[in-house]
Length: 542
Image (cartoon, rainbow, N blue to C red; front, side):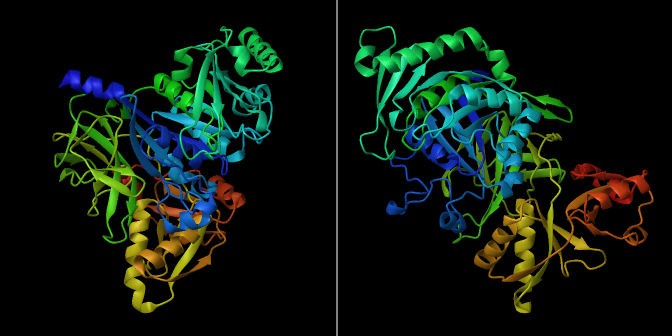
């Protein structure tokens, strides 16, 4: 078993792609699947003439708008590697889902638009990767259009993100003159041919050694001269590449290409699989859990309801951390404090699912969820409690009271709200002494309100009205002698309860929050929810 476990761990690569909206993330995802043999024809979101939709988008709203608003899990085999690609939402209003997904990844691919460079959303997501200390690989996209000089982009990575880069390859030309990429390690030029496929199939490619006479037949004298000058500059003035710095997230291996035309995608995928780490240990409250630990353990980082509208099902996405998962096995559920059966395991290609018999560390599987899982739940083989760290619940920034437009559909509305809150789409708060009458929803991005209305209507048959509230901060309260009534009298805020009965205070603005912190030094105002196992003591203020 140990030899098989070590072999399966070494084969795995689990990563997420992070980017600013419109940097080409969905397109790159499809092209990786194309080269991995998971799909045979790639359809760009913007290829309206073909009326195809992105392979990773499953919700109708995503297909209509051409954006990703949910995280998908996509799995394929390439060069005997089992690849788990966690496709994250591209829209900034769904960054909370991206943060959670990054907790399940061992590496991140940072996608950058060659013309725009480092954009605001890229900065936010980069910070999360840095906090987790995971390796970051940079793919500079859209070289088929005119953009900024590669050296300028390298400088921007260092100035804006504070990370040095090492170009693993170097582009030859840009825009219509983009000819290919030069592999610095192998000293080989990959020359590409577009030949009118619009990037729908694998691109024709020719590899020529820069030291061979044949290079003169594929590059002009001026192209070759510029390439040699650039490479000499990089060799003299650039950083040396070390695997240790890359693994620690201190140096980012950098690649150039065009996802739309497939230029540079295969060289990137080949190098990435060689350089990206296999599944690593994960912190628990009892110390690190190694992937080669023979006992199965994993954690839930995402829950998705109604991926199959015909069955109204609910799927909990679990990252396997250690040991071997076997279909139908039992595991100890730390939050519930009891053994549960891990039923109906699936692997995914967006909404398409395949039943599986087993899974190994690094794999992400979907478990049928009868309502017993929450984001952050830990599961482990044997009657032992294992609590994984690192799937936070974030403070919302937009709030609204939810009202049912049809009183007869109120139960459907409440059921939908409950399920969508367990999924992490929204957070539900109860006004004091009101229960689920006029509940308040909180979201991290305003577009999530639109998704909430859309899904409640289309999946639960409940039309709702949202009355926006003037609050911009939510803070969980921990401390003794907290009295919501007297606290609320001070104005500019409202005390509510979360789904676990923990008190939160909604603040109108920065000033209101600062005023409360200064006036009540005995209380702690937390931007992340306290761990569930602390909830009883936190709620009572003890």
